[in-house]
Image (cartoon, rainbow, N blue to C red; front, top):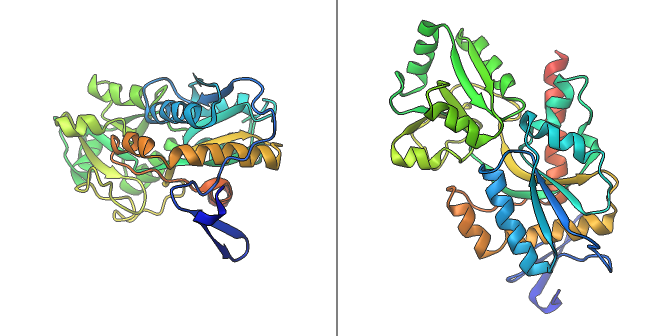
Length: 319
């Protein structure tokens, strides 16, 4: 790092902001990596997490000179991937990729037999924040929240396809409050969830950005968005906060993790490599295709976010 380009700010820790450089510069142990670095995407090919990770892997190859292999390990909203990641060696050669972070926050609490817990991973950072929406076909018999609720009451149920592990939680909260029966239909990935709607198999899909191209083409319409704010790509659709809901787990990021026990040196190395890639114009161009901007919480920020979200779910379910 060129210290002439940096300004040190003292607080609880020293943070260096460098012009034209990443906040977390990759400083790796000698000889690392000794073999290809594998990125395990917890979903089937074609979804947002998959596309972003493949773009990042290409950039990391250029920047670090590593051999990076992206493998898809879909199933259970990335739960299958995390179960395997928790057993993997903490040697820096395996990184898990998910979106949520429900697979490591609510699932370990709601499923007692789940083989891992939030503390079983070392969190490295995020690629971008997601605006997750509930979307239907534009030809559906409802075009907004009020009409959706009325339709669900008349039909008797509302089917929603999703790959998210904790989306049953969202469905249950909405069903209870509105007096409807919102039924979750599991999908292998975001792309699969959207295809279910397009094929007429479900009434709605929960998607971060996979459905944006169909919003643009007029094939789909967003009915509402999870979290506190409306999505920039569908600003006509109200947020759950606007609708009177305070649902934990509604903030989503594409995030990266390694097995617990990763050394501080390897944590700095991997989080630095990730951050350098996320902060490139090349990656920004990829993120822009999904109406989003790169957003990295960093290793400590992501760790705090994960543990805070898990605590909220634990408190909620303890009631």
